[in-house]
Amino acid sequence: REFLWQEGHTAHASFDDANVMVRQALDLYRRVYEELLAVPVVPGYKTEKEKFAGGHSTTTVEAYVPVAGRAIQGATSHHLGQNFGKMFDINYQDEKGETQIAWQTSWGLTTRTIGVMIMVHGDDTGLVLPPKIAPLQAVIVPIVSKKHPLENFSEYCGGILKSLQDQDIRCKLDDRSIYNPGWKYAHWEQKGVPIRIEVGPRDLENKQVRLVVRFSGEKIDVGVDDLADTIAKKLDEVQKGMFAKALQFRDDHLVKVTEWKDFVPNLELHNLVLTPWCGGEHQDWEEWVKDKSREESLASRGEAGEDDRTATSVAAKTLCIPFDQPELPEGAKCIASGLPATCWVMWGRSY
Image 1 (cartoon, rainbow, N blue to C red):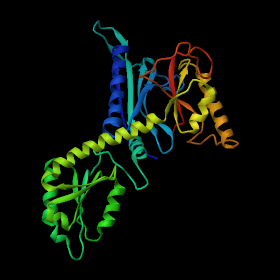
Image 2: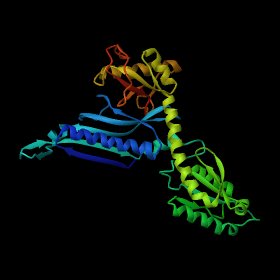
Image 3: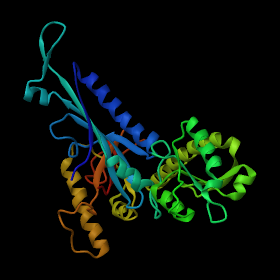
Image 4: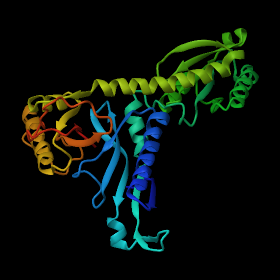
């Protein structure tokens, strides 16, 4: 299998400078997901068990896939510390002329992002693409028939196409003669094009078009003179609406749990679970939660076991220690160890 990978590495004179780079890179990845792909993510730190081996710390953005009720790691940004500098003699000369070991970072994003976007927004008809990244933002479909051949629509649709392109709207006129309008509707819906522009004989008479929005199914008739501005506003509305819908669904499935008895039942409800935790360094208790949640989940389903090689285990794993931490109740105990809690950690079933 092959996938494309964007990766960055930097070297710095201090721990703090490297840390700033780590957070800047992660925030760029957050913005790719949230501002371009309309996918909400939770930024945070990986636990010691889940961090990049040999590094000082790993930060991550975690997404939620509604159809599966699973989390998926969106991108990571690592503070590598000086371990690899010492190992491979990566050094620099400071302002005093002395040789120092560099503090390093590494961060990456892959074409997994496309799969995440498809799983978050797609439906039974096909793709639903956010306008900001859609190769085509609008497609014009003339409603031709024997009585109303394509020639009747060519000049009108050509004018619409040019007016949209002049406003930098990525659009296309589907003037293929071998397919009927209904086939074209289904084709472009499957492709996830945000807006379909239907032009029928009555539209020609009334100097208007009908817009059909892929995301919501909304249908509106718009005068051709106002079309470019209307579509630009509608594309912005769709982008925001897609993010809001995904965020609401994710938040509806992000719950706080403070007692173990409620942990696995919430996993079974396809929820992400925030729990009080004794700290990311407690790898033994992290492994306990993984094993115990698998055992209880399988028992609740009446299943004897699962293949160790499965990519979709029923076991829970830590996803991240979110940067944005809710207030811990006074005296809160770790859900697994019973030790005093130092933070909230987010758990879930994950790809």
